[in-house]
Amino acid sequence: MAARGVPALGLYPALLGAAWAALAPSVQRLHAGRARARGRFRVRRGRGLAARLLAALLRLPEAGEDVTVTLTVEPAGDGERWLRAFGDRPLHSAQWRSGDLLVEGLGLVQCWFRLHAEGGALVFEHVRSTLGLRGLGLPLPRWLAPRIEGRAGPLRDEVHVDVRIFAPIAGLLVAYEGRVAGGAEEAPSARAGGSAPESAARPALEPRA
Image (cartoon, rainbow, N blue to C red; front, side, top):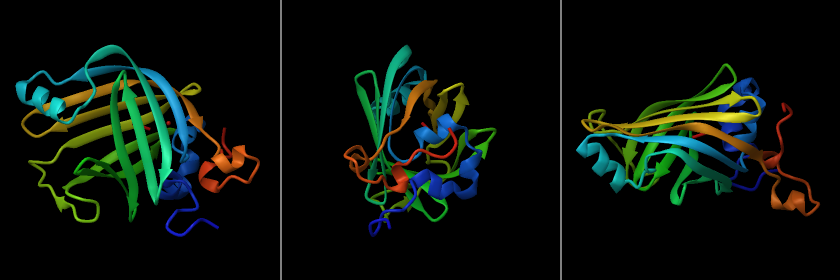
């Protein structure tokens, strides 16, 4: 049995349901609920003054052609913490479920996504954005809300990640694309010889963002 308030399945398997089986094994490993991965990305920044100022304010990754990226995914309450680092610049976010949508919070901004499995890849459909504390966020109008496009797809045993973040008027803020290798980790109790919860178990089949 899962602890109260903590889903028995990982966040992404629970949201995708039967569609989880359609993801490629490498994508499953990265989104199973507890993971470590490492890769190299090309990062682009928007060129306009407004885009540069907004990207700096949000501490988004700096531009670079061959940026080392690390990722740690940890269960946290009823969701997950995604701890990314682009070179020496961290980009941390919290993720949780609201109905059939994934919510990712970065500071006071929350982006809401519907998840799809397409050709073994995980696709993030940005539905809306809110501003405020979790559970008290106010909907942002489309003309003011950021827009995010994200996809994590299989590339042999790795995951190819393609993410683009836009803002009204400013246009493209940052885009990063590259590959990561790594995957699901066992929970500490399993490494100590106990039984692992379902959220930490490797999927039966052998790519996010």
